[in-house]
Every structure is written in C-alpha cells, then in structure tokens.
Length: 293
Ligand code: 3HC
Image 1 (tube, rainbow, N blue to C red):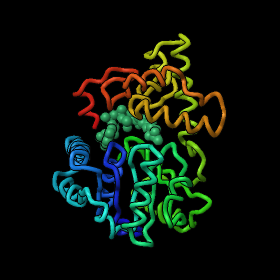
Image 2: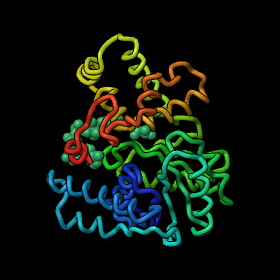
Image 3: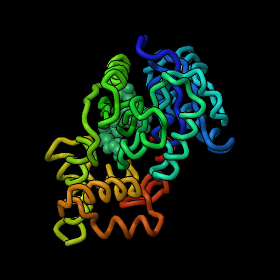
Image 4: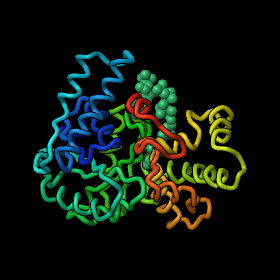
C-alpha cells in the first residue's frame, strides 16, 4: 500500500512501539520489531495480539486479515535484523542516554541511506540526531496514544535534517491514513505544547480545591465535547510521561502554565502512573486495562 519505504523497523515494543508496528503492518509494510530482551519481546507480541484481537471482536477486521498483519511483523532481540530496513522508528523509554545508545547502534547496523526516526515526545530530536554519523537522515515521528486510532503524526525536522527525509516520512504517514504535520524541533512540538498546558491546569485546579476530579472530567467531556476528561486522559498517557513532557516544555518556555503541578510529581514518585500501573488519578482494574489494550 505504501510506496515511500519498503521495510520498516520499530525499536521498543511498549504501548507506543507496538501500536506503531501495528499501524505499519496494517498499511501492508513488512515490519521488524526489536526489543531489548525476550520478556519485553513477548510483552510486545501480547500488545499486538490483543490490539488486533480487539479489532476482530468489534468486527473491524477478519481473522484472516489479522493473521496477515501479525505475520508481517518479525520480532527479534537482535539489532542486526534491522540491517535491511529503509526506515527505523525508535520508541524506547524517554531517556537521552538510552536514545543515544540506540541511535548509535542503529547508525552502525542500518543501511547508510536508511532514515532513522524517534517517537520522542519530550526530548530534543537534534540532541538525538547528533549521536549518529547521519544527522541529515534523522527525524522525529511523533504518534499519539492509542497509535492505531489517533490520526495525527507530527514529523519533526531539525536544522540538520535533509528536507527529503521529512517529506518521505510525511508521505508514509499519509499513505497510512494519518494526518501528518511537519514542524521544527521545539519542546512539545505542537500538540503537546498546547495540550499539556491544559492538562496541567486541570491538576492545579484539583489541588487548589477548585473542583473535584470527577467534576472537572465531566465538565470537559460533557461541556467541551472532548472524548475524555483531563484526568482520564492523563491516566491513559501515563503520569510519568505527563511529567516528562511538562518538564521539557517548561524548561524551554519558562511559561508558568507548564510548571508541573506538585500532585503530578507526588503521584509519579509514589509509582502511581495511571492505567499502566493500575492506579493514577483513578484506580484501574486489570480487566479494564486488558479490555483497553
Ligand atoms: N488500541 C487500539 N484501538 C483502540 C484502543 C487502543 N488502545 N483504544 C480504543 N481503540 C479503538 C476501539 O477499538 C474503537 O475502534 P472501532 O471504532 O474501530 O471499533 C475506537 O478506538 C473507539 O474506542 P472505544 O469505543 O472503546 O472507546 P472511546 O470511544 O471512548 O475511544 C479513545 C477511546 C480513542 C481512547 C478516545 O477516548 C480518545 O480519543 N481519547 C483521547 C485520546 C488522546 O487525546 N490521545 C492523545 C494523548 S497525547 C499523546 O499521546 C502524546 C504523547 O506524546 C503523550
């Protein structure tokens, strides 16, 4: 279905990486999914199986089509298996040292003309790109959670990126049925820069006793027509990710609206990260999490 790339790799198969691998495989591309160890690889396989299984259950996908999608994804713990890919999307946890290690390794194993993309939501794509000997071929490709559902893909070019790499990744996003927007390397890009000021304000409102969690969520869902209220959404995104995005945007903008609400730090320090840990602003039972995956 897609003409811009012929074989795509995904490194890191957590919620976002597995979702991105699913989107690519649904688009007809052969995908190589790489994880650090066999346990993480099995968790990634589980994500893919549950998400496509859910689509079958809802009558959106036939069992045969699901099998074809899953067969298109080759899973591996060996970076060398990415050697034939002409695009690799990295979706490992948001730590610059880890991203540097991954990109240095990708630079070593991938074809010289391969484009290397990061799904970072809070780190500088430029700082990631300089870990490679090919910064002209490094872009940001920022998907939204849940990746199979949300249509936006932000494509980020740095001052070092060649325009062709940005254009090819944006064309791929279009081929996959997504809506790409192309932007420069600024903290929060576009969507998170705007969205997280609002989410943070909701947390401040809760802390100051302005309104309850449930009333704030109901107000934004039923009054502003959003698919979910801010606390439900922060729990979906993950409170650790929320904190990281806010810290990155605040460091660049110095806008007090982005100074993370203390309650976010408190919950993250306590290990209450939202749906993925079973509790955040809400308590989530296992059944609900499995159904949502
Ligand atoms: N994986 C795959 N598909 C999923 C899914 C998931 N995790 N969650 C929901 N879906 C699918 C369902 O299968 C269903 O598909 P169908 O219409 O083809 O049957 C469709 O999405 C709607 O799902 P539901 O009916 O179960 O539930 P809702 O109607 O409540 O939709 C939602 C769920 C799509 C998550 C919706 O509530 C929503 O859009 N919420 C806002 C999400 C959002 O704002 N995301 C962006 C966060 S910011 C971000 O990601 C950036 C990062 O850098 C932090």
